[in-house]
Image (cartoon, rainbow, N blue to C red; front, top):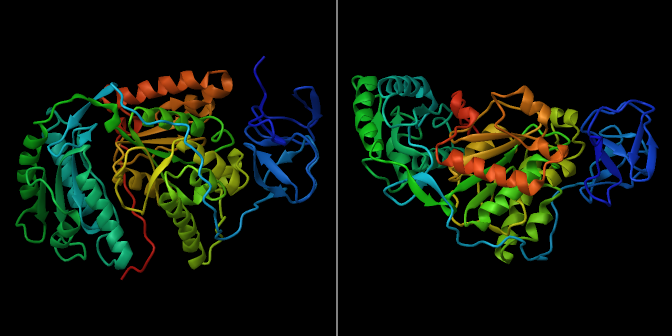
Length: 497
């Protein structure tokens, strides 16, 4: 008989429903028989015992909030009767624990493109990067013409990534735009790059080059469209050279230790912390054990579970960086007179997520059990092998873009609600429930919902790892690649002139 509920941790005082319960149904947990007091949706929580007012609600073995009122056994446990325990910025103590994951050498390989600077890409694409949003359509036209003209060449496509910024920006906002665009220019999934500028913007080409730093003149070409007599014609002339350069690369075996993977969740449900996110954590541990790297972002979705990462910091300096990461982002909310814990979203709540603690305790599971080797500000690139934390919001478009810009070849994106969105790199959608996987075949790439239907976690991790190796080797494409869902979005905090 199929299970109808999950007890996530033996110390929990709630269970997660695997079906829709009706008033009067009987929930059997071990030797307990509990009468359901109201209709309860699948994926939501049911009280295993009476929870008194202000008593903690326990899931994953941790408090996810406290009862607003007395909650009887068999009751629906959700936003109407549970409140967060979280408040503002906090002080933390350094209490390190040894990591359960050991990094080591591996003979495992995938087929990638070794670039002239030694970096490795998993796609052989050409990217058109515009320094300012007002030439989005010009860059789009160039990319379309190049795709049509060179569709039979040894390329994975020519892509343009429209954005809103690069002009009328000041201070950190302008610098963030420059860092994200610069990091995309340096990304090894792009064999070659055409940078297009207008000529009068804050982020005009000469200024952008200062942020860009060293680059290969054969790989990166520049065009200022105000100076050009016919910007489309001149762009296509430059494209001919860029295509010729890109065609010089062939796939070859490279160590799996070169693989860098971003970790993201969006549109969560009650199964996210039970299936999808733990699967990503298990994958992350396995990749790191082979010498590879993963990067975790969505800073607000660490609130309430941050100490699980702090205790795995590689040293006290890294611990301090995690403290600053969390408290600085809380200050960002406070500066704008916003509630630090204005989360989860309406869709998350509908899926069964009640408080930010619950969402965060599920979210951090994507980071597995490896030590945290580094903490990056928004717009920075990965420097160390292993698990890195990256500052960024929970917003799907902004955070996936930041993960790609940090150097991730692939972004793994768990979801219980579904989304067609994809970033500039392969964006693998992992459903937390099988129903979503079956419903949205054009969106979802892998079904983590198998874990609630009896699939062994280690076995599914191995399957998923092999799937990612095939994807990195070009034997498979993610749905966002198949259907052309490749976008970017850049964080904004300040004034627009």
